[in-house]
Length: 299
Image 1 (cartoon, rainbow, N blue to C red):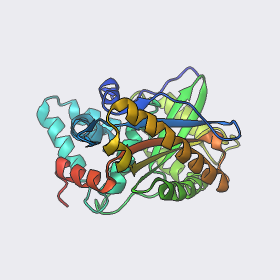
Image 2 (tube, helix red, strand yellow):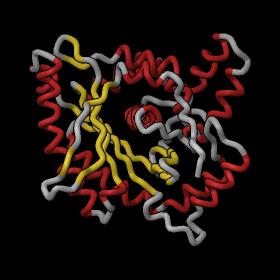
Image 3 (tube, helix red, strand yellow):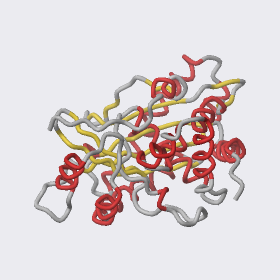
Image 4 (cartoon, rainbow, N blue to C red):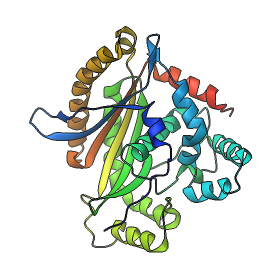
């Protein structure tokens, strides 16, 4: 296939300057390479600094996370700041203090897949919510891309926990469950597939390739990226420089990556089809509290 799906976020370079990648490759103890993405936010005064990232969320990420590209294009096609503000306010009404922690995790997962994997969201599940206080069930993200002619569907999972290993335990189980329930996801895709450069021909091709009721082998098509955001106050607060922080982060990540992929295999998921996306915070609870306040989530 010569097709390429266009990412939805258009200011990726700006986001990468704030949500920075750690350039590193990991292997398990037995020598197998695993897919990882380590990112981090700025540290100021011994604590994670959120304001720059929150501003990008407010400017562009939130509306792209919540709504389909078709709806955004329709609204922003009116041009002017008023239509953008209206779309942001509508997006906020989809969120709730009761579900903000899970939704922030899903938003970060969406951002990482779109910006770093260049894989657009093809299903906007949160836009289908009729009650802001109810969580979205099934995979936390449904993204897709074609690499070197090969299709990859990402059924993503996100966890925002104080403790990484507790998050990994639950995430490994959720990943296996999401793959088992893929037929339900496909029914939604069949009705609501959307991404920036969608057309009738490309939609038809993708739905045919992703159809779980056909004879297509989806073994290597369905992939399971997992975002884990976790509290790591000691390293963040005690490292005197960014270089020292990155050194400690890489060391800690090695232990966590091994733990995660071991749990993934325990649940019979092929590690070649899984990826771990990591982001440490000074305190996850503080992160969520500040997110709710910054965005003005009232319900």
